[in-house]
Image (cartoon, each protein chain N blue to C red):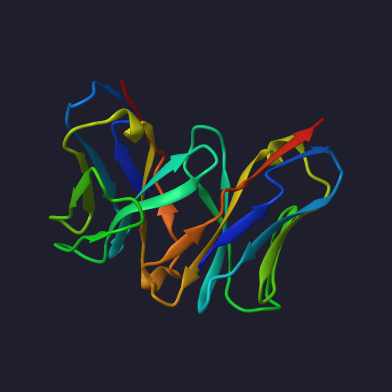
Length: 113
Length: 110
């Protein structure tokens, strides 16, 4: 009963390095999301996808790119990491047939030094 | 402006001391209001969905209610294991838009 799985769970990057966060869901949900959570600011939407091969910008998309080549996977990329991208990142998924409820992964802790 | 505000930011209760958390919203065209529980180091865990004013949902010591402008999460006789951050989120009829509050951090002392 995996649900939404994120890798890696922890990562330390140097400024300017690149990396990709991986998200996989096994619920056959059509919608997938990437959020970041910072103290006092709540969850903010970075990018989302309404289906395989589609992506769209959320509230805070700058500095991030995403891809959804398969329905079950949603990748979040940082091309040139900056200290301001130090945060906890959550992947989530939802479906119209599952009451539109968003189900979250366990989070990925990213520190950029 | 579409906005979700939760209050209080933090709440300390004694075990058994009932209270309520508030989630007020100014989002137009509400499709649903969601409550989540988040433990430290974990992702948010789904609790309830409310769709229309007057609706109520219950789970163990928790009861969620909804009006046209706000939702309450009532905690009856809380236990230390209820300590967590409680988040609410509002979904607009544009399906892809979910607006999250900043959460209420609940601490229940034995």
